[in-house]
Image (cartoon, rainbow, N blue to C red; front, top):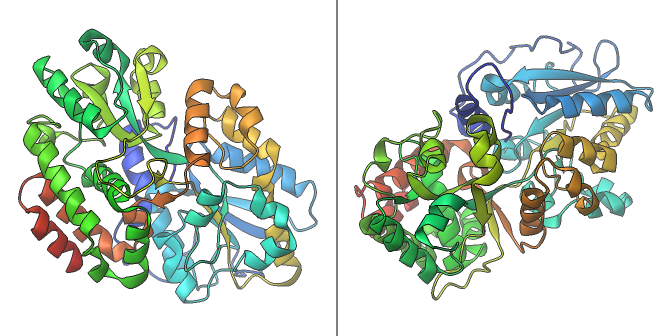
Length: 444
């Protein structure tokens, strides 16, 4: 999932289509739909023998254009980049796989976005290639590499920047209140009372977009029970939602809502039209739990605030929780996957192409684009980021994390996304009790 940085439409509208593209219901498109610019020869057999590479089209596509140019200077088999408009990327990817119009190499979100392809043996298992080239596996932060795996096997190579969920805060609002960022859950609860007393909403929350609420549930389940709770749900099915950590997280959400942590109007606040972010930047809210793309959002829409007023910290531990407070949730990165039908010299070329994502010049291009690379050796490059302090915080946060849990609506098969979002929204809106919330999840 990527954030477009400069497009003709509003940034936040694009963010909604981009970051959640893999969780949209798959449209009923004709199975034979072909993408403009794709060869008709199918994987391993394009008309001109080239390598068909698909990428999600946004402002970061220039990084992939550059790597195609570099690769083509070294390879007899040339890569052809097809830039697919973001709004239809997920649908076109799904309807094309298994047809002669399928790509050889393609951009994806890992996890649930490719799980159906894995079940149908449509993707190349990359573990043998990593066994032959151990340095390839070592090139990436382990938690990010593993987050893209399916059933313990790697089908993707990280190819864009990391996107953890971060607790942001408004420096000016905190200074006016004489407050400091929370280091513990008790600190967080005290800050709710502090900011309510100042007439400031403690946390901005875009209640019309339930994926923003899901971030809270994901972190709380992780803090109460550890990453293993969701891993069990992924492996054992919906009955595994019946875990004490899930109920405890739901009870904590109810407590936060009852305390006024999100104010009174959060149900009508949006993210896709920049509602929550604007309230936060204008000092109407003190904190905002959001993905790392919030920095780019604020830079685009409230640049002065992004430059001097935006602060960031980690999500705190919770009382009695067994989860590691260094763990993170969010969207680890995007991945390159290879079509299993690609064979022979073309498969060798595809493997050579995806390995370019492990090189420092590729990481340098990502940093120049404002991203934070997922490679394990990027530390020396972070000083070249447009905001080195933020880049180092984000990189260290992820590199030190024992677990990086992929957003649930990305990790689970797409059919679960609508009921998951609805159930989370009902919890925040007081339409489900914590116990009923758990029952609803189990019944998905």
